[in-house]
Image (cartoon, rainbow, N blue to C red; front, top):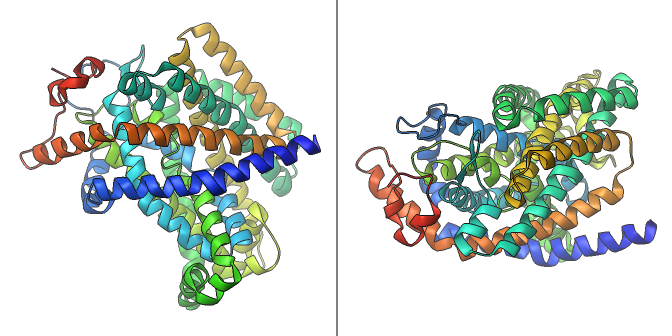
Length: 470
């Protein structure tokens, strides 16, 4: 097992540090330039669309649909999890305060990749039995006509999100509840498994309804807590900002090699948290009932900002304002101690609140991750018996993950996540022309009113975009 762990670690490090990180940056830069900074120039449009995202288009042809906001909530449910609380803490502990700067950079640039992949997911979506379905597997098949490539992606995302990531999320929940409240891991595992099975058996509509209620409430509560801590330590804010910039770009840090560590950790943890370009959130984006593919692309780009620029930054400021990152702690323990210190030091609020937040953030990630696996299994072979087996396996994985050591599973997930991301990045670059055509059509129509996409807009793929009106 130790040999296998070392081998998996070596492969994961090579894939992420020397292949994935440069390609993520390259693809994000390409879409930023090609779309003329869509993530900056259309930020106001993103907010406008989010305000209207609970509505479905009047001309909807699907009787059972998921609203744009519900699809957004499902994608945020997957994004906002242990990466926002524990992952940011690990990035700072290993890469230093400069890692926060590079998390911001990958979020700002990566929002363009998130826009591209979610627009493609909408463009090539299909009508399922209860809602729309889509994602990288679907746009690889319909846009590039390569089933082997599409099936490879579908398998990788199911292994990564449906199994590996869900075991990690359930393990984090159990550990946090045991540490804070002394709950027996076995009983937590049983309760968590039963709750997971009940939610996932309801399909995407139950998952989306659950997510649109829980995610905003917990995100707002966490932001308020962070603001309270920052206000209580407002005198340290200029020092914290200087610390982030200096450790990310400072001359002495560059000579010492710490800038490279900060850059790699910031980008890796940023990717794990916001998932921009990874190919996961397009599966949720495709379910939305909207009048134009670009609408959901813009809303999902806003999701990257919500995850990294707001929630991850909250965690970073809490940790850096407290100064606890110098005490040798890591992961969720560092975040807990930082909250306690930031609130005055004589309190256990940090441990309690983080445990509750981790439960809701990680549990919503579990149900969203499950859906990513389901939609890709249905792509490979749409059989309800297979989906039932998958639901039972996910429930078992949640139980097993709650009571097991997961070092090898986490490393395995790093490998499969890197591979699925590489598959998706290659696909969105190959399909870039359609992204740009959709964006141009949206901008032209927006000047005249509410944009509506029609199959005739891009005639060469009209036969592959049958969800859209003539």
